[in-house]
Length: 212
Image (cartoon, rainbow, N blue to C red; front, side):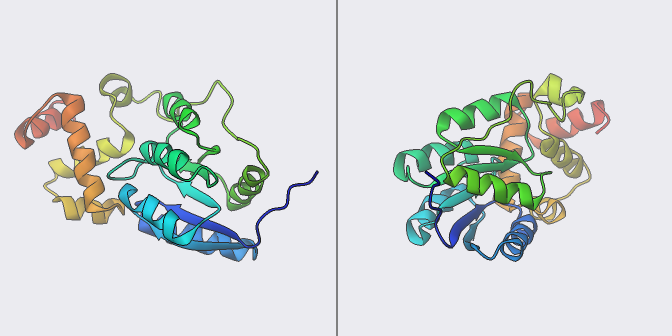
């Protein structure tokens, strides 16, 4: 039996990159008249309230959200709104993240370099009952980056370290990277934890030592 899909398909976008979210919302609705974006949120803490208020069929969810992150949001969504399908849309190709999102109950996992038609196709397949995840071996887009391998730093965290060394404040870093100030703060906490440092002076010394 061919499943009956909702009409219109109601989508919630959860991504702390406002410019990316705005562009995706526009492309999705222009590419398919049966799709409507019911809300855009930029913090993990806003995801569940928005789902409760707007009743989306699909949540397109980035992993890199502040307070809490996208993986924790999937767990909360699966427990609280099991009928809502969650599609991860992220820059991270790490197998660990893929496995965690699968176990948390996400319906699909896409990388941000995909085109809008592929996102729309995934949305329809997920609503039809499929789960769509990369098959191993997954290519790690940053596997040859020594900082990723040695210090477990993400590419965004490396960019933030470089900008901190240049003297930029959290708001300035957020503006330059098109991310929320709270996201910058969250990254800084993760950087300090991963590098086992406790203050700005130690971070600057690290950046100088490794030529960042």
